[in-house]
Image (tube, rainbow, N blue to C red):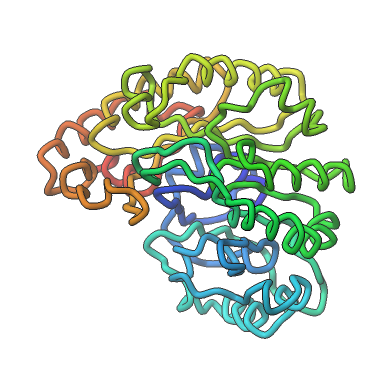
Length: 364
């Protein structure tokens, strides 16, 4: 299994709540079924530090999701260029540790371990990652209850810095890659990220672009404006199966528009213009009863419904109510109801992947 399989099955994802899976072995033919039911052993080096880097706010560079390495960065692109960081001491040390079977730098409770066949020193062979994940731009037109309490818009000063300082610095690097993934706030709602998407696509029309979005601007007009005629992967954060719950969680009355845009992008998949389509669902007290219906939405639009448990972010007031909403915790009053619901055969669907914490509940 390589990193493309993890993107394909919805495992590479950034956003409120975090993510993670560990896998037992390499599969000849990866699928959601054999993937999500085998996640225990660490018997091969993890491929992420060999193929991938992630850029976050304040210029911090990570070899995977920051949670997976306890928020210990590999460097900062304000201090170094990306080539130097990727081929620098910290990345090399981590790769060599993994080649020796040493996972002490990783948080094994949540990490998205991606096994690889590396058996010799990678550092002398490849000077660029395969994929880079851009998470540093937090501009977004939503204030989802699990993520933030205010809509975030870059100030004129911040936008000028992003466009005039950061974009020229990272564009030469990322334009040479095979894949690029956009996250952060919402790339399609961000003025800077939209500019970067356009420039990347123009400079390297063959690059595989993945976008994680709430989906409000995921329509034909916006794709034309960005010059996008194909995408590798799309992840839509929806978190509900009904308009009523959507409005409570996303704090916006746009459920019908999102369903219309989901139908549009599903059409791209049918036409071969999109390889992978995911819809995301962060599980908590307000929405867990809609999980089966959400899988049905995924089945309808030929997507994969990806469920993971809520993890508190201090940028949202909801983190203060963790004990109230953490329905997946054994001590929660609704835990038995969630446990019973997860026995539903629909969660074995090829259109569904459960985060390990939820999968363990389902298999109890």
